[in-house]
Image 1 (tube, rainbow over the protein chains, first blue to last red):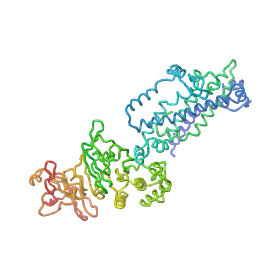
Image 2: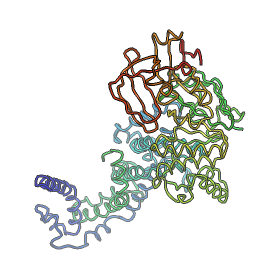
Image 3: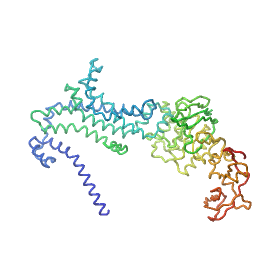
Image 4: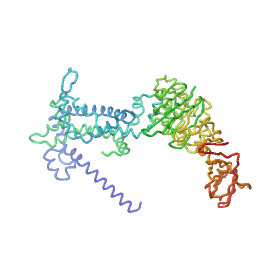
Length: 289
Length: 333
């Protein structure tokens, strides 16, 4: 390899390594700090020792965190709410996108434009009207009929099932699939739902992975404002609300780091499982995270 | 019976009319080729017969039944696409049997008919493979196999060979012709390749701007083209056209003579020009002669002839092979 090419390659890798370190440092800091007592954590934070597993390391922060907040319940709530929302979102968004791309119906372009326009509306804008709506909606549950969705799982799930980004991702992906496959299936005698289920969905692995990860991240990480508004009972609280248990008179930073490490694990696991499909999809659709 | 009738069919996309009032009869059991340049509406006609495009007006009958508003699967047709349109996530066997799987036929029947189709198309050893593991020719065979198992009254082919290389195309032409004689179903085949049209068709329908220019047996169109468009489209290389003195002396405004019918080096020549270029193809030689008034004239002579570029060439236009047109219509044989 010529010298100038070698130098360029080295520089490229140094730059990439530097960028990778910038992204990974906060996570390393969080994990390492979760094993340190508060005093040492604060003392180390001014030096590189903050990123190194040195000094008095123990699992005490973890056991204290479990004592301070019902982590298992919050974790279950978060994972349950996120998983149900992601599954329903994938189903409804892909069906909506299928209809937009493959079916001919009056007003579909206008409706698609309206859905895309909701991109620019921040959630904070609609939070209060949404609260008023869900507070007056009926619900038939196991304990009978009641009005108002507050303090429940479904109030944290249903308003977030459909969103413009997920529909848009599916629409873009479906548009790139060869139309002849749909036509061939129609000639073979498939109903529109069979075309969706037996031809389109089996070919949509990459976009399903991308949409699932993006939706998972949004749902899992943003469970703060809305749950504060609609959930007063501990039973339905997600992990993000659990953080408030640690910000009291004396903030226990070690416990916070332990708590954050625990609640980061599902995101990490989910990403690791789907990362190959996610990267493939990002590469093929040109969508940037 | 698999006769197809198009009655006063029109098709518009928005304000653009692509098929203006077309009527066509495709006889039962025939191999009819729709041929024409890109954008002439041949694929649109095929898609309307398949039910993949709605007609703007008019009606379509298949086997005596009005299918104008029927679903594609209820028309008794099967279609082979240019891109093969095989389901990438299914094996060859699943691709071929997909229609029967949807129709919830018994497994034994599905397996039997898939095997029969595979046998006809020599796909027996490939049934467990996915489409991406197949060559272009094998994929096309699978697409045809999928069509066969539907047991249709009418097969529709939309430029099925255009993605294949020249030698494979020739081989598949023969296989399709054999398949037609073996199963005897009505076949409608769309292509822009007039060689495919001439070699496979019982009936050729030449289309231009959504209208039928002429329809008939291949040799009828070759020997007696009704319009200069058909004369120029059927036959390779294309017919030579002459306008001006040569044509007016013979009482027409356009005179056409095919390259293979022009004599070269004859004493009693009609025209004289300069040889621009010649191509030796082995079996015959293509000679491109530049004439001062009529421009380039293509001549095909039998055998391999070495001709000097720039030398004079004397051309004879035999009367019996002349095609005379006036006002865009044929006036004599």
